[in-house]
Structure formats: structure tokens, C-alpha cells
Length: 512
Ligand code: NDP
Ligand code: BG6
Image 1 (cartoon, helix red, strand yellow):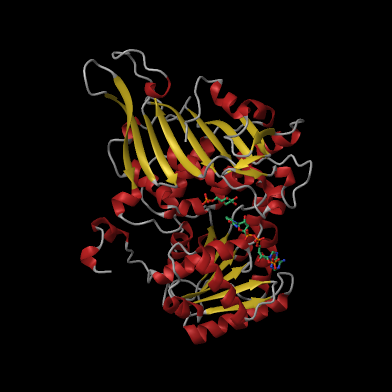
Image 2 (cartoon, helix red, strand yellow):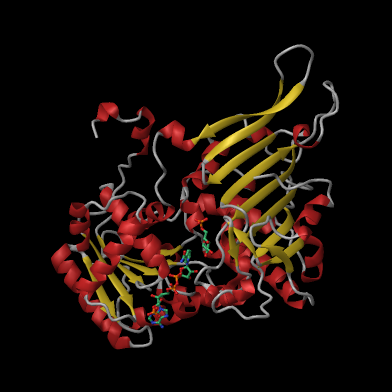
């Protein structure tokens, strides 16, 4: 593109950061995540010119691919899922030259010896200098086995500054509950030091999520009112229109609390509520996030009916077409009680937030895909322009995480003309308009960070543990809840119980 025709603000989007030479191993290379997210992200990094020149990928899974057939399969996946289309044949060609595949089972040490040979080949042919980035795109139950085999095959090294390094990226959910997450952490730490560990939560890679920190701590006007004196309550919604798709077996084990609340929603809450970190480095930021998680008042198992709602989608409509109930999905039990929707009322017990409720809701098969954080300010102390009802009564700051990424502020304005009629209006900031470009995919940012060695946007062991303690207590309470979850029609905003949860406090969910 001719630089003079570039949108003036898009220059700031170019990054000077380039990953260090390395070979990346993807465990679970034949899975959904590899097809839809990981390979497209790597290709896009290559297209942006930030992938190191000395780079290789070795896919590892049970499926019998040859090097050639794996390249063909991934080319198809990238062409379909890349955010930038059509596929650039030249860039793909360069990238694919460093793409290899090892077929094997995690149970079999000999497969890891094959992997070792493939990595040594990459060092010679691609100049990856012995640096290794292991990516576990697999369910948490098989991670301990991978760790054990990596160690047994002598594939992990950390010889200090300037020497070849090994890092490991672990997908979410990290464990199944507090206990299993602790066990997994113990397995991880037997093989890797914490500084080598990158627990991924892809929400942290989203531009709009990172912007939360810039918005709060890079401006002077918001922090003074970001507290219990001015804020009435906060709402966090992560709605999806899709159902469980082909992930029924996974979902039957996970459900909404493990899949979305323990990780993504807790991250959004902690970034909204945290204090300013002393520096923008990995530990300072994560210290503050952990403090918020520790301050969240636990919902005890006997309190779940008071503070939480569990829902499951029943038959309904999805974009005008009939949609099946969760219990009718592939690989889902006909009498499953697994929740596909959750609403929670939480309190952060500290000086800043005492008494301010944080309402969280998330679910599958809701009317649309939208993630938003809204901060609802207190009512006017005095009704100078007549009593304002409902929406008009409060200023609301809405941070749209996705889609239509942006921030809007709702306030009241005089209607032009005679008299003093007042109406609610919005002041809007939109990323697309302001920067003239779509933000990169979360996985691009996170993969690049891990190649550079920056763990700021990854979760630390104590953070994961604290989030699990909160969620595990609710999971236990839900297990003891004798009735079915509240059913909601596919394509609706969830069960009536979710309206009642917030309605009982004289508030209502924001219309999205
Ligand atoms: P899939 O089931 O699609 O893929 C799992 C992969 O792991 C497959 O390649 C599978 O190979 C491989 N695998 C599992 N067990 C073994 C074994 N014993 N030996 C060798 N290979 C094995 O899952 P996803 O890709 O959807 O998810 C992977 C992880 O990523 C999960 O933890 C999930 O929570 C997380 N995640 C997924 C997201 C998504 O959108 N898909 C989003 C965010 C996180 P095979 O098929 O040959 O068994
Ligand atoms: C994943 C969950 O972590 O996040 C999925 O496993 C969910 O169930 C997805 O669909 C949502 O991510 P995004 O980026 O589309 O909001």
C-alpha cells in the first residue's frame, strides 16, 4: 500500500516486535483449535512480517498425516479461517516450507523421540537454534502425560540467558476444579519453571480487553469516578448465538462455568475492578488482578440459589431457523443437567467496590454474539428536569469488547426546540473508524508475545487457583441443587430467573 494513502492512525498499529527464532510444537495439531485459530494466526503473523525468519512448526497428533498432506489440510484451514483473505500464495509457500508433522500418541515415548528428531532437523534446516515453544491444544486431562513425556524424552531445556530456551503454552480450561488445577500446576512445575509457563486465556489477547487498562490508567478523568461513590453497579455480558456445535462431549464435562466463567469472565471482572499496577510488566499487572480475585466474596454452596442462575437452552429459533435443544445435541445426554447459561451476582469486598454488585451473565444460543462491560453510574441526586425513568436515570459507560469494538457513554441532552425536554443520547468511539483497521486476532498477539517471552497477557498459577476456588464452590452448590437448570428458549436472552436475579435489586439487564 502506498504509505500516503494509509489511514493516518493505522501507522500506530504496525508493530516493531518480532518473535525470537524458535520451533513451535503443537500438541493436538489435528483439532478444532489448530484449524480455526492457531494456524490462521501463525499465517497472519507471517503476513504481517513479525514471525521470525528462523521459524518452524511441528504438528503432533494421532491422525496419520504425511508432511505433505498436513500442509494441504492446513492450507485449506487457513484459507477458510484467516481474517485476511484471499490466501497470499507466496507468504503461505514460505510459511508452509517450515511446517512439519509427527503422527503419534501421547502415551508412546517413541513418538516423542520422533518429535525430537523432527526438532533437530528444524534446527539444522530452519535455524531455530534449539529454542522450543510447546503448545498444548488438548484437553487438560492429557496435559500431565505430555509433560511427563517431554521430560522423559529430554526435550525441555532452560540453560539460562542467551542459551536455548523452552516454553510451554497451556490451553484453558486449566484443570477441572481447584484440586485438579493444583495437581496440574504441580506436574507443570516438575518440568518447567513458572517463568517458562504461559497459561492462555485468549480474551486477554483481544485488543479491546487490553484497552481496558489504557482506558482506565491512560486517562485521568475516569479513575476518580471508578468506585463505590459514583458507580451503582457493573454488568458483564458474554453472549454467544452459537450452540455447543460439535463439542458436545467436551461441553458435557465442562459446562458454562468452566468454559467461560472461570477464565474469560473472571479476567474481564478483574481488569475492570483492579487497582493501577505499579508498572506494565507481567508480575505487576498480575499482582493487581489476583488482589481483585481474592477480594471477591465467595458464593458459598448453600447460597447458590440466591446469587446464581443456571440455565440450559431448550428448542427455539436461531437466526430464523429452528434450533435444537441442548439435550438433543450430538454427544449430549438426553437428561443432561449441564448449564449452558449462567448469571451471577458478585461483590468485590474492598475499599473501592464495597456494596457495588457486579452482575455477570454468559450463555450459548442467545440472540446474538456480543461481549460488553457496562458501568452504571448512580442516579441524579436531584430531578431538576423532571423525574427520569429507567434508562434515562443513569449515565452508562459501555465498553464493547466484540463485535463493533468500541466505547460509548450514555448521557442526557436537551431536545432541540422549546421547553426543557431531555432525552438520552450516546457519545461513541469505534475502533474501526478511529484506526481504519480491524484489530488482529487475539491468538496472533498471544503467540507473538510467547515467542518474545512476554507473559503479561497470560495467567499466573495463583490467579488461576483463586478463580478456581470461587468457581469450584459454585460448582459444588450446583451439584447439590436438586432441580433441573432453568430452561430458556434458544434465541432468547436466557431464563426468567436471570431477569429475577437483577430485578430483585430494582435493576435490569442492559438491552444489547
Ligand atoms: P479437539 O477435540 O478438536 O482437538 C483435540 C486434539 O488433541 C486433537 O488433535 C486430538 O487428536 C488430540 N489428542 C487428544 N488426546 C490425544 C492423545 N492421547 N494422543 C494424541 N493426540 C491426542 O479440541 P479443541 O481443538 O477444540 O480444543 C483443544 C483445547 O483448546 C481444549 O482444552 C479447549 O478447551 C481449548 N480451546 C478450544 C477452543 C476452540 O474454539 N476450539 C477455544 C479456546 C480454547 P485426535 O483427534 O487424533 O484424538
Ligand atoms: C472458548 C470457549 O474459550 O471461547 C468457547 O471454549 C467459546 O466455548 C469461545 O465459544 C468464545 O470465544 P470468542 O473469542 O468467540 O468470544
